[in-house]
Length: 58
Length: 448
Image 1 (cartoon, rainbow over the protein chains, first blue to last red):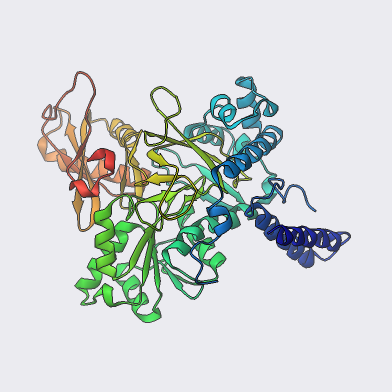
Image 2 (cartoon, each protein chain N blue to C red):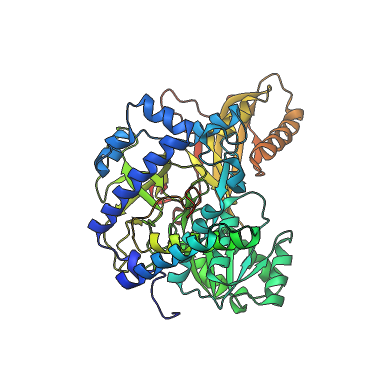
């Protein structure tokens, strides 16, 4: 499980990098949705993550 | 994947100590969130002289954080519509608006963020999955959509699970039956009483619902197969299907999926923190004792709810044969603290009816609400007394006037029956207004 959690965290870091400077609203929305799902995955694995990813963009 | 017993075995079976540690961490984060973002909660906590950093244990949270009630939110929203200071997000992030039915008098506005809708839908899936519903199933929604959270969240759930969605919005009961025969869905989503009504209408059409494509029925909105075993038996026989139920509250979440064993619901401890309170003393009740369910939600970013009074009376158990470690509410909701009954899917509060009776000048303040069971539905009759100065020839006009008034305000048509002036009993102490004549098996456990 630890390995899966580590990979999800890495995926969120990659998404954050992809979001930086993104000026295409469609792609930005997709990346934010993807990050929301990964936040939700960590939450449902019992990981300590902030409450509101939409208020603290990656 | 489809053979898995649980939607998420990892969290549904987390040890209690781990769940409690998660709750404390999440409650502390939630307190900081609402203190920073909600004027309503900042004032509430300041008035109680509590700062988020003061909460160092679950006991601290239960004891120090003030209770909240639906009426407070409604008052704040009425003063500053649509959401007032209860909103904890910029309004631009509210992507969906729902409302309660307004049966307490005024509807409660419920804002959701995008993430809130995802998490609300997900809450249904735990129960759907445990019942045996899988992504290959197709859902039939037997209701008009409106602004009711229960219906929308069921739709979000079907999307989440990846099932086909078939909307029955706008159809009458025969139309629903014909649509089911034509489109062959496998899951029926409706209120439990409407599932029985549909089966009865199907029979009148010469259709045996138990031979239809429906393999599962799933319900919310009123006491169903978990709270009322007789209801389960009737629905399962009528539809030839497995019947399931969740416990939800529109403004919170579909927070308690049905237990696979079938005799209760489990609190989704990823989404909410709950405890039980003696409504008279305000003290916490122990496992096995009946108390009011007090709920804090982690998944309502837009309008957070902390130590929220549900007015549902429940009995908690810490273990269950199904294997889930999430707190079990045995028999779901056993009763209510506030004289609320559900009629054809609509919550009707005694006080709301009483207020409407008080608005009709030629009716006395003595009345009775008589609950019966008709055509597989709960029915309520309002017995009222015209005042002495009204000629009996005008009593039926008064009955129509009152019935229309109730329908307009509460969105449910109740039969109103005039009785002679001063014929209803008068009480010196505790007034008994609700006369429950339903068979015992169709009443909540505490009302039997």
